[in-house]
Length: 201
Ligand SMILES: Nc1nc2c(c(=O)[nH]1)N[C@H]1C(S)=C(S)[C@@H](COP(=O)(O)O)O[C@H]1N2
Ligand SMILES: [Mo]
Image (cartoon, rainbow, N blue to C red; front, side):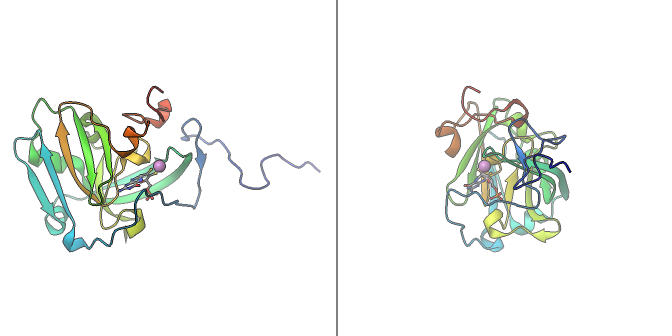
């Protein structure tokens, strides 16, 4: 009888859709937080789009829920190596928020802020075109506090450190501004398909 390599322990199989250097976390959904999970009630959550916009705007929980709903179905990729296939998140496309705030032509980048102080820097182009969301549920259930509930940003085509939990807002800028991990040597964009893990990759 043949014993096939890879069937003992945690098989880190390569599968289609898995970016280079990543493994399939299967049913695991690791929690990665630099800070303590805040006790943030939905009533105390708000989302603001400011900086280089024609009309700075802030949405309460109820106002954000009144926007057209939009869901993401697909994969997520953490820079520490795990990827999770077939996730589903429900919320509102970031396009809806940005359209209301009306970015100025000079806006090229954004710094996403958390209610806890965590930040992530992103090119504005990665936040438009139906590729980024503010989400409050996952598979139809309210987002767990440790996963960013009541609401978080998701930018699933980039490494997941850009997907700010307990998201508070976006500040639009005319230059690249490093956030928490970017200041610590991580890549300004973080495209998993190009393995942009660290600055210079
Ligand atoms: N506010 C906040 N958002 C955050 C983080 C964090 O530490 N604080 N970690 C980031 C990282 S590195 C990853 S991989 C994902 C993890 O999300 P999860 O804990 O729901 O898996 O959240 C991102 N967003
Ligand atoms: Mo991560």
